[in-house]
Length: 365
Image (cartoon, rainbow, N blue to C red; front, top):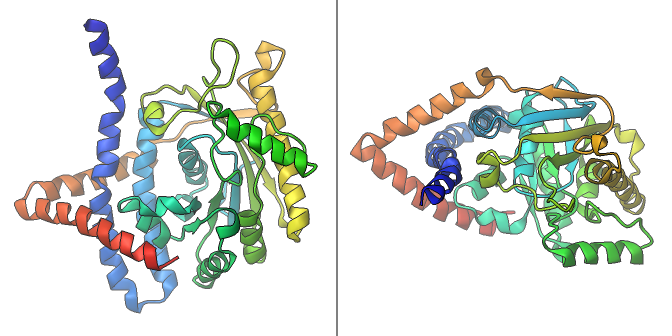
């Protein structure tokens, strides 16, 4: 009985953060919606500047919970510039926390508001969030033959025309690496073998379409490409086998003590322009990721496991960058919920915001 209570209490550690993050979403959408209407007659870049500032506030609050609240240690390797740049961010993909990792790096460059994602099409139906990600400059894409290159190019060109700062996050594997679904891994390895590509162990064979369209469309707009490799400590079982990376709820329950992030900054001139050659280049980048992860998970010397090779830095995020956003959004939401009219507006925002959002993304790319 006591053990069950302890376990239940432990598992509930994510409830407060989740309630605050989701609970403040209507407040955020109302603030953003008001600015969207007010800025309708202004040049697009003015809307983008304030939108990025609003997004910084919300995501800073998110990082309060994922970094300050959890106490996770963020270990950085490689070359992360201190100054913000227009970049494409390419990463291996294991779990939903990977989205947050991009925020963790961006805030350390004062570029948090510039983060935009290339996301699989089904995520556009998320209540409130799906619609907003699109409005913020995110791109929803379908896989394989259904991939609409023209739509993606048009959206990216519109961002460049508005002089939108770009921190575009792409997960080229197209789906998560999940050791509990060996068929996906086996199919990926079979495809690589069939195409004459190196077989990868700890990542899936990357798909080049979205990466090629993004780099080709914005090659004169970008400063660099960040090749990011992420490993979550504590994702090996007692037999030494890799297990599933933490979900957002598990991460918020403080089940991941350290996140290791290797950053390699690549100049555009070092990336082939033609899709055929870029495909080979991208696979070679994932071979490098695979070698890093083999060292992290499988090194024969146990002292070399649970870390990437090379110099590392323990990067701690200051509360000054996150706590004010939590207090601001939390205070606005609380003040709204204190009045009957505020509560009605709050509920209507959830309902009508979701309905309008679903209608919008169904007719707009």
